[in-house]
Length: 505
Image (cartoon, rainbow, N blue to C red; front, side, top):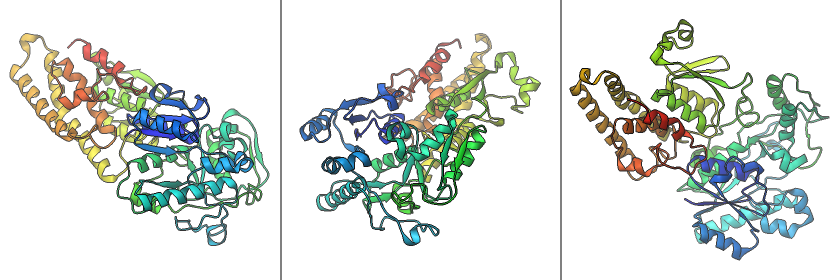
């Protein structure tokens, strides 16, 4: 898959690009302005093209030059410019917009809207989106074009306030609280509305890019529940106790502009796309769970493969952590103070704001639950189960034999058990043969890059240490082979692995 994102340096485009990069892709971002502020962390891992999507010939050149197979079209004129230049708005716009909402779907009942609810746009911005959805679905039905339209409620996330100004009310209350600025609005604190985080926007788009066998072309993407500005304020107050937030009571904080408050029925997206919201106010008020007391602590020993497994997951998720080295060679894991953290005297252990969790596989599952973006498990329950089975296979059928080798090689050469070493090598070869079969015809063990792949990465490093070669599939995969180059900027894992791999046996 090679993906072109129009409006790729905008809020939603940048978030989608970041998710694609985390999955090993190199998307092409097309925009009519050069503003890299929202993609600074991935700018080396994407191709940015400055251009106008209304220039058909230039657009075709981009598609041909980069071998584009999928297009995510998010370029649009915002409501103000759209009203001022309706012709350009129609030419550029996309997606769908519900518009005015009345009756049972509005206050106080808020019966969730499904995709059959007729759009009723109230401005040119909404008109262009309905037109584009209608046209795309016509092409899907008439010409067999693979087209999917995703409908979103209000979106919040990093960059919304800077890029969208007054329209980013949810972003403003968050960023004002974070910056210590006062936020005040005279009315509307009780108004319920479906509000989706930009990470879920990206998540839904990637699911749509990979979807097959869809029976419809339009899907609602949201959370399926309503929240209020007061709900935002309550969460922010817990995180920023000194924040100054004053929100008046009542409904309609937009004061008559766009009566589009509603709750989306996301059942079809769940059923056909495998979509499930990964963010909520309690867990993700500003993009990811905020570490209120500072970074979490990881108690680990750098040469430990299980420790390395957790460090890789932390880096993949971009999470800050304080490294606390427990030197196993000095028996520090048996120190009474450390035994209060890990009662079995092993590494790793993780302290996340006072909550202690140990066992590398359990820690990585905890990180996936608490910090779900970017996701390191597949969306579907069957694939998630397969990933966990591969993790279990590594923990119980592969790693113990490496432990045997390590223990034997720590002995003086004349004291090593040659038969035990041969048996361990044979068992390791047999285990990796199973993993090789799992990789046949695919780039990753289970769908996209996941905790299953992370589980095996430290052990691939051990193969070099014990002068064994991984199978051909591992050599083809930069992310699995820690000694190979990989385009993803976050792939700093080889820096962790190499000193360990090259170190003394």
